[in-house]
Image (cartoon, rainbow, N blue to C red; front, side):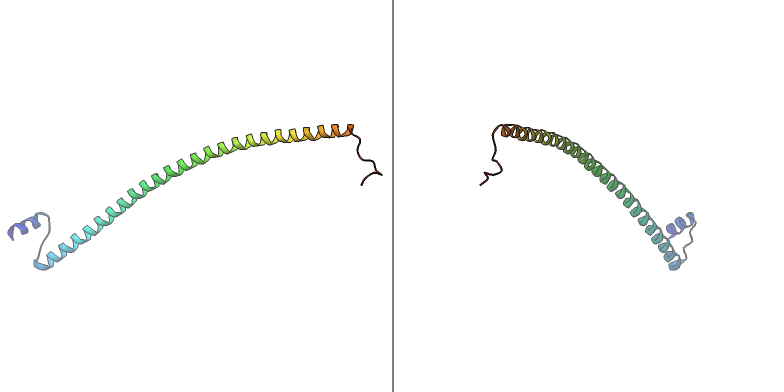
Length: 114
């Protein structure tokens, strides 16, 4: 016990039987609790940073993919609009040609409808 007493006195601690030992155990327990709390906080903040970085990277990749898809859809929409415009022009031209051809052919007169 002499070695423990001299170690304790070197550390500036006085151990008076069981009371001193209990006090030391309480201090050690509080110190361990604080250490565990700080370690848990550090691990949580490191985990959050990693999760945040992963989420940010995933969201950035999703945004890039969405923008690329938007550009592709805009291009397809422009091509479809041009095709519809051409088709409408062809229909108008065909209808106009029919009207011109139809004007050469005598149509039914007002009194001969049947």
